[in-house]
Length: 481
Image (cartoon, rainbow, N blue to C red; front, side):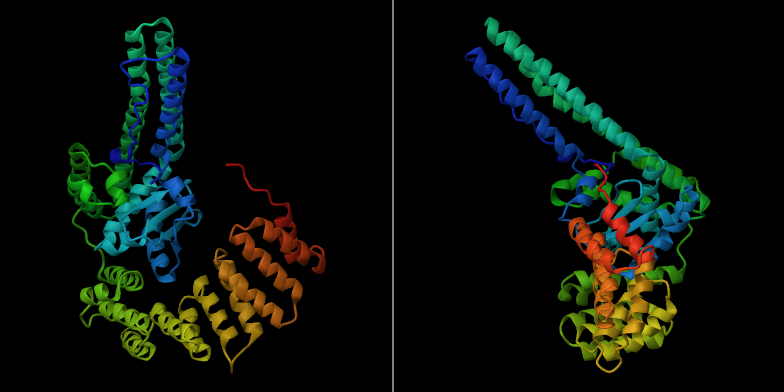
């Protein structure tokens, strides 16, 4: 998480000037400056947490309408209790098996799929979301950046003072002064790091208090948050054996755990449990994510029963093992048990679509859309199925579903490609080029988006919505970081 940094991740600063016998002043000064620069670089990993992670190309986001809807339902009351508008906070799923969640810019919460899989109850995830909401409301991101800058300044000043003392001692032949200067320069980054980490821990405690307050306000228990943090507090005793970012980014001293427990147990809702319906949704999402991201052997060992989550996992794994017919038979059992579950119908349509049976995919996807008409991912998949069909190819219907799906969920870059194909098939080259431009823009390829928008703009009617879109893309300038 951007706000949190594990002590074990603090870099060690190499001692480049710990020499008993000093050479020439120029040589010593050169080494001292090199040390100063190296130490400054060494300070950087302190801030290389969630912001860098979120912006890094190594982070792989995963999209799933069912899980996203569930997490939004978890977060909505907490965000409202915090005075935030849920529609202004984006929640992203990170395809990572480790337990982690973090905020980046006060507008986005990232949560690993592993966090959901490892959480046994909805209340555990809700507690994590409440904690992250506490960071957003507290403005911790901005203040932590200021604290980081202060720490860097302290380190730089301390090292420069030390370098000066080293150089002066070397020039005067006073080895004692040079050694003192070396000690100052060596210790400065550590002091800055401890100052910064102390501030980060303070913000963690503030987020804890805020989380408990939000949960109390929404009539929910803080027991899940306490259980999650307790688990990682125990694991942190053996941190060399674990790699979960939560261990590193949420150091759990006993006094902090005692404070969380004291606050949580004061609540009249402490022993309140999640509803059976919500627990089932949680279990289904866990089974689905595990089935799509873990090895088939591991999943089948974990989900051997005949309950709905087990059948869900078995259907997905069976499909992954290239037996779509058997997988659909299992899905049919799920549909029979819950005929109004849109995501069982979605899975049936997905299996048909991805095995080259677009015509068979249309009906189950239409059913899924009818049950969840505002889920953009479902509409885009239905549009794709219509485009891939042989008997029921209706480009107009495909355009309608794709456009509405992208309006509800504009981040689906693949949807713009399908929309461009549909427009091209209808002979509307300008709209096809505009869809392609929007796809490039959504993917962050601004140069390609501008090039395609320029082509489309020439063909579009001046002042039309699409012409204005093209004009917006052409006038877009990337914000300075």
